[in-house]
Structures are given as C-alpha cells and as structure tokens.
Amino acid sequence: MQIRPAEPADAEAVARLHVDAWRTAYRGLVPDSFLESLDWNRRAQRFRESLAQKDEETYLVELEGVVLGFVTLGACRDEDVDPEVVGEIWGIYLAPQHWRKGIGRQLCRLSDIPL
Image 1 (cartoon, rainbow, N blue to C red):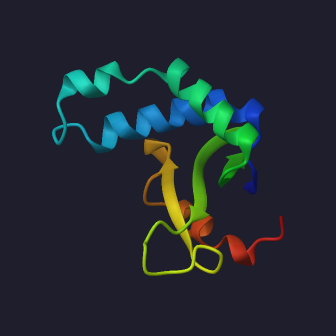
Image 2: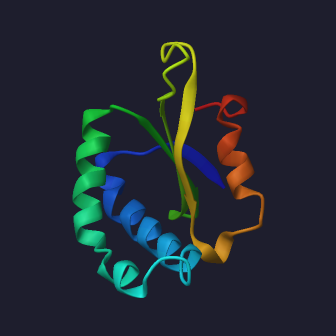
C-alpha cells in the first residue's frame, strides 16, 4: 500500500470513489434521488480544478495502482483559531469494500509517512 499526493490526473478515480462512498454511506439517510443524481463526471471536473489550484492537500492511498481512498486537508475554518497554525481534515473517503480495515487511520497519520 502506498500513500502519495493526488494530482489532477487522479481526478476521475477520486470522483468515482467519492460518489461510490456517498451512495453507500448515506443510503437511507438522504433521498435516493439525490444519491442517484451524483455525477462522477461533474465531480471529476471539480476535483481536477481543485487539485490543479492546490488550495488544499489531497493524498491518495493506493494498492497496486488502484485508489482505495483519499483524504483532503486544508486550513481550519473555525473562526477562533489561526489557520496558519491549525489545519482541518476537509474530507476522508474510502472505497466501501475497504471500510473497517485501518486504511482511514493510516490516512489520518500522514505526518508519520515519508512523502
């Protein structure tokens, strides 16, 4: 397993994973019509743009070239902290078939991983 910074070329894989995770995690909590309206092509374009702009940091976890999950980090949005000092996990997503295997925990320990 490898963790590496995401690049704009990863946008399609990240978008598919994001949509699949939403559809699985939120089924029964949000309307099915909303989940079915999620479009990985639109998501891919948004991910491509944000990865190119580098306003946040996104890291992928891969196994044999297959993206298993990702985490996006950015400045903390709380008004009572200094965003230059405090960061925030903006999102963490794993492919549903890889839930509960400790992969998310590894993504949250990025400071321990030589990138």
